[in-house]
Image (tube, rainbow, N blue to C red):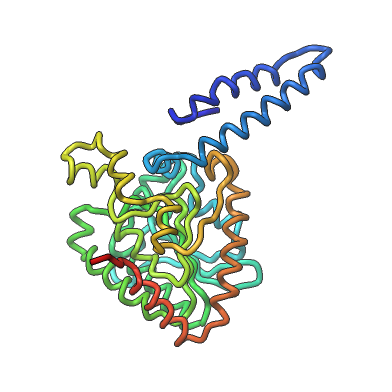
Length: 316
């Protein structure tokens, strides 16, 4: 059933369909044609709505509480996942998960932000907001991947790096900055998929990649719309204006050259069909992996440098 305000135009249609499905009658077949017609119109109307979402509406979809999390994608896309723990300095961060896995027949290093599916899991995983040890663990695993010459695949889904005092005391800014520097020099292919919310340096800390892709209803931004509204307007009620100005949607970022490809989600968002979403991701990642694996290490690094150097163009 509809969960967002912008889905209200289809709410009555969904109720009518549900009512027809629950009719107990010997002549139930009489309603089949009407039911099929209503379902077709519902799909068409819902597609029209989702094809024209505003940036703020897209943020709402990206934050949906039932949206697939990293372990859903591990289940549907990868096999033989072996999780590796710890940064070898302070501890293990459950908000950042990584380890060796297989993607089809390819051995890869998988790293990603990990959210929970209920309040207990989210508390354990700090709502996907990694601390310095999370970013240091991610870099340790990338270097391990480089040592064994396997590509790195990262999944981004975080509002941002954890802003708490303990994280700052342990060098949150330094850990992320080091990741940006070191990822530019990793001599194996790096592929990033933004699956939900890609927020600020917390996202970029595992997203300096040869190929950056986004799900169609994901968002990727230097700051949250609420944070931007608080700074520019001193009022969080301007979040929708901020979302528009920030150009945070996959379509806008593809036009700006920040990402390389959009991976399509089912109408209504990834939460309506996690398995299909995962299959779409797998198909595109395998295609990118095949292309990048053909490059020499030198060409790979040069193209990565050129990719990020070309961002931020301006007209005098």
